[in-house]
Length: 164
Picture 1 (tube, rainbow, N blue to C red):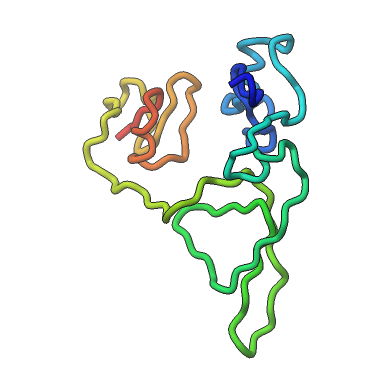
Picture 2 (cartoon, rainbow, N blue to C red; picture 1 turned 180 degrees about the horizontal axis):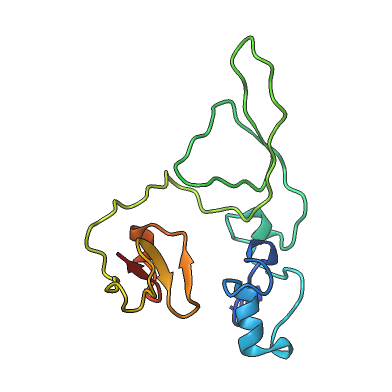
């Protein structure tokens, strides 16, 4: 762990966090818990040369080679890319400008499928119990927030409850 500079509490990219000061912001929660003196506000210094991800292999890299695709990409889940993606158009049509997004790359290796929604989740609260009047939502009692998660996704987190 020390060899690759991976020791410590965590590494978190600020651009992937919730809005500063938000109760959902991981950086805000850590800052409030551990204090500024116990946080390292530095650029990415990871040294992990065997990583499958270019941005981790090379540390804090700001440029990435473009990726070109001739087939359209469809997905049920949001798709992010660390490099420009260009797709070809059908004959006789005008090509649109390439769409470029910058985000931390997600692991690849197969299609992403959402689990089927079940009618008996493991974490369910009785109405009026911890739900504070909320119905048909995922609820986080610690912060009093309703969350935009499906019933299936809500039950994946032990601290969240599904309010029927």
